[in-house]
Length: 114
Length: 113
Image (cartoon, rainbow over all chains, first blue to last red; front, top):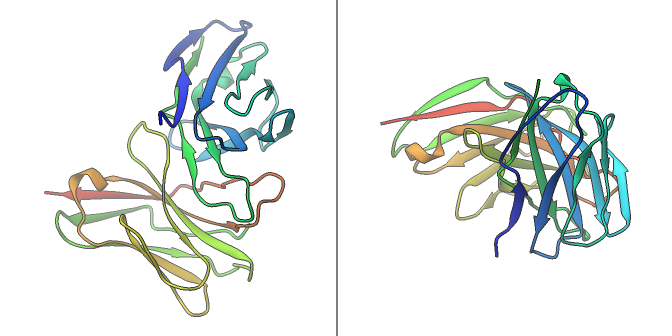
């Protein structure tokens, strides 16, 4: 299993540009989520999904859109990039059962908005 | 979810046990204690979780006090590769909407040769 994969690893955008961060998992996990981590800080939840066709907002959703058309993929779209969105973005997946056990995180996408 | 308090940093000698404390005095009866770690620039990695009994797996042991107001993560034989930020997280294990892991600032563990 590849686990959770994210592309690209690095990205530089100009203010106002849009782009999509890709996230895929091959563990058949129902639950997937996106976090951002600013320098020296903890992770903050952006959006999450509990299955194909089901998404919801997390702690810091403004400026981001998500969709979940398949179990495997959960892309994060930046609508109009702003310097405040410079961060490291992590995707995570986990089993959606009677008890939330571990979540598996991807390697991250390092985004710089100039 | 209950708030947690962890020391900002700790040092440990290679080969010795690393004991990382966490206070969670407002923990509720249905909240579990989770531990994750983040090695520099990588995604967080799950270590262990527990409710009230002590837990052990191939990575670590989790000791939870009887009143559940605090816990200790034990890495029995720390190696240089265990240098990381360790996060103690308290949340309900039942899958409800959000299922958010609230990461605080964690403890920077440095294992020295």
